[in-house]
Image 1 (tube, rainbow over the protein chains, first blue to last red):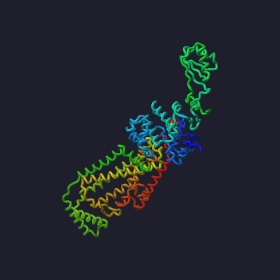
Image 2: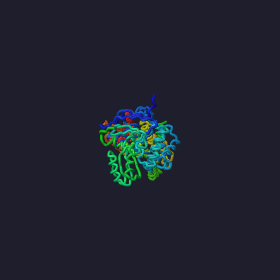
Image 3: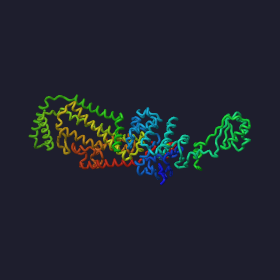
Length: 311
Length: 316
Ligand SMILES: Nc1ncnc2c1ncn2[C@@H]1O[C@H](COP(=O)(O)OP(=O)(O)OP(=O)(O)O)[C@@H](O)[C@H]1O
Ligand SMILES: [Mg+2]
């Protein structure tokens, strides 16, 4: 028998009134994978997550956590899950530590030691005994993460976890999620609009638009450079002359000047011949930059703001 | 075990808030105030025994002469009074003298304040989780919604019990300090359901009143809790249940000529009517009221439970 998926979503659908907010979503997420939900505002990412953790009813379909149906055995399924849905809200009149104790009391087997451990993991040791009302947004986000980690979940579900974090915090989060996935085999689901974040964080990304699953892509497919056109910048001493030169030698390339640089779209295996032409034309080259087509470009291209999306 | 932990969590959330202790403080302050006012107004009546003896002689004469042409009830009443006065004279108790126990009976009238404060907590305990958004954290642990709602309801009842105990213990304490510890057995006089004069010891009367008060409190707290769970608004829950408590009783009295009024919850919440003063509406019995209370109690709890279980928790 194949190893059971950490999370399996089958035909998940949410209808409110006459509006279909999540439309027949099916996904399988194995252990040890960092999986992203990517979609524009209002795509239905949060709604999907709310159904996955039992906050809202499921119109149609199933959510299985380690094979356990969340709507049939909530307690057993949630025993595997740690979650943050939108901004984590804590009791402001309690300290961070008292908040964690409160949530620890609700699950079996969370020791005082474990609380100290998660506080350290999220880097809140300094302020944990202060009241939450004195916390900044990023500190509350960290406390929320600590709460989600209390039960050592096999499935970690984080809705926009980078919201409010500083660059160092985002990096720490990324490293933590990577560590959990690789070492502890945790399945991590994150949603975010910060596309560059997803690029660095996730193994695979589901692109969701208007409640529909558009595509699931492994990040290597998505940012492939085999044969793809790379946006290339070349810093030269005489940009005007360089543009004229390339237009005659390589008439199939679109070249334009940008300050003291020239910009062109070119395949990787063509770059040497472009450089050769410039050198032969007596143009001095100071630098050559090739930029991978980013997930953002792909994402915008896929969703494209239009409904007739073709992949 | 989990339920025990959940209740402990709810208790932490109630008692770690300053608000709760302000409410407790107000109850204590109000009780002391009543004690100080009553203490300062107490007059010395050194001749009370002579006054009682004279009163009894006059009443006895009236009884002897008027036996033929006075209504039976009045004669009964007079006989009771003579007995009582005799009791006071024999036991050397000054009836005008406030005792610690009598004070506690008077202080029980602060129950309106008590009720308002209990409703504040009962109406807030579910709604505040929604208004702060913490409900989603609470519901994404391993506890089921039923367990969470039950723990909140039980914590509410425990708080109600605690506040009632505060008033009870503190009013006795104040009474003993200001007016003395003795005379627990002194008779408390009241008219029963048939208008007959009755008496029981002050201590028993006090306990009985608190027993009836607790029933009233459980019902009123349940109303606030239900509105809180259904509408997720503390303001609505607190306002409606306090209004219901104060206006409800008045309304029942005002409409007491209609017999359907007996099906209104508030006609039945104060069970002491069957011991003291008689029922609000003719023909009501203790059994009827208890049945009505049980029905209302079950319906309110089922409603809160059904709606809380099904609700989509989103878009806070
Ligand atoms: N109560 C409701 N009734 C009808 N539609 C709703 C309701 N609540 C939310 N929606 C709609 O559901 C859609 C999905 O919302 P959701 O919060 O899941 O989006 P999201 O992908 O998380 O967006 P964001 O990136 O902004 O967080 C939105 O179009 C929203 O307007
Ligand atoms: Mg969202």
